[in-house]
Length: 486
Image 1 (cartoon, rainbow, N blue to C red):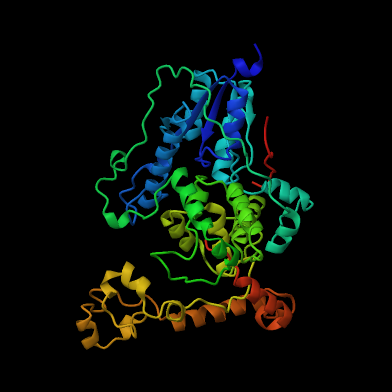
Image 2 (image 1 turned 90 degrees about the horizontal axis):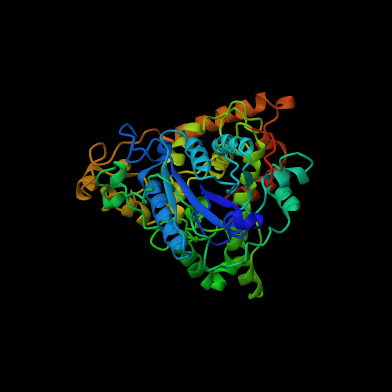
């Protein structure tokens, strides 16, 4: 009897909620006679928080919780078609405790899971791998959530984290090909003993009560939907070839100007490597196509850039103790709102964008400030986006849609929207607040630069390059993590 015939394996799902291009699952099916596919429901992520400012848990809005549950349900369906199923466990407190208990109780000899570079995940995974090592359990943790291995990129750069997109591209090269092997069956699940195995819960079963339809996003979670949306997007080869960010209708919502695949990438319902190579297939069938950083593949490379920088930068999600963050403007509270409410909330990308747009890192042209008034007037002069998502302003004339507080009272009455009653008054005077912010940022920069120079006025050539690269910004412990453990 060979080792594979006798081995029992656990595939521990966290992200990577898919069957296609899943190196951990593929290795487990080839290396063991019995495979336990496991997901542990994390109370810190799912437990409803009655004190939260909107429905959801303390860490995730209800829309993202719903998307996760739909993704788990779809994964279970796809595993069942392969003769297996998803084994759902519930952690009482710490997910790692639940995993370690199952490893012991089910006599697991091999553990497979996708590598994760977020600080919380690194701490959680170390507890599990330490237990596995002490128990003689083999561990295989391949990189498959990103195009590249962040640790490998940093190693290629002499141990330094690349802090510009171009330097990252120079090091990265072409990403590895996805796992191409397709299979029709998985090894059976072994004996689970007296474990209570749960089906994927509904929101109501988690204690969320009735959720209004307004809180239900139009994007259903899961690998099936991810692959369907990807194929639909790539059918329009001309659109793929000409995709150029930031061009496009930024206010589009009924038919978005992008693929809307970011939540599927966030949860790993769609493999970024598979998506990248499918785009390349389209490029090969066209005469010309756009290039990074503005192209469709360029957006995936932006994602990997932020993953690499976040992995190589201690305290990346904080101002203090973050060596690449200029301590001039507070951005953490805004980050926290996005982190909780975005369906595609991604730790590396969310923090990276807040560092970028606050001029705290990557981009330092602090005088470039998006105006919620002029920006909207430029891209959506009729205010269709606002009328759709803010019903109170639905009948406001377009002349006042971006500044409804300036509308005469007679106009407000006709639009059935009295400012201060039906719609709030401005929190701040944007013109005055942005000027004050600009002035204070300028003083801070001047006082912290050798010679007291202002970066905005200092180097025209450099500023020109900074302005150009700013338009391409994406939407949305320092010890090296092993690339894989075996």
